Amino acid sequence: LAQEFPNSAPCRNNVAWLSAVCHQRLDEALANALKAVELSPSTPSYLDTLAEVYFQQGDRPKAIEYGKKVLELAPGNKLFAERLKHFENDPLPK
Image 1 (cartoon, rainbow, N blue to C red):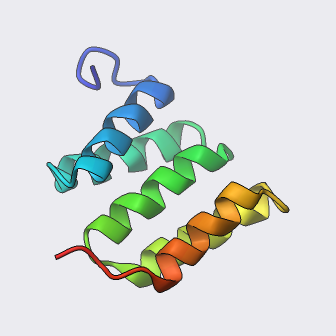
Image 2 (image 1 turned 180 degrees about the vertical axis):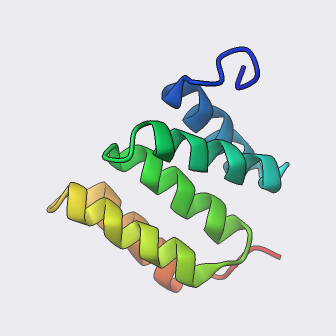
């Protein structure tokens, strides 16, 4: 899908999210998440996907950095606050 619709931020984000939660093709997930954020930099869910990709890659500092950016865009959002706690405290994938 990302190849067919390279300038679709939602498509890029969805591909990245699926890869991240399945812990598969994380390099491609990162490229897709970065592109989604490039295309739509103020969409909190896209930044959250990017944070999750970094977390799945074992990069806790980057995950936390982007998790905090998400909360700057969506202050008071309980889901995103919980996601930041996930990045800060959960064991990194092996």
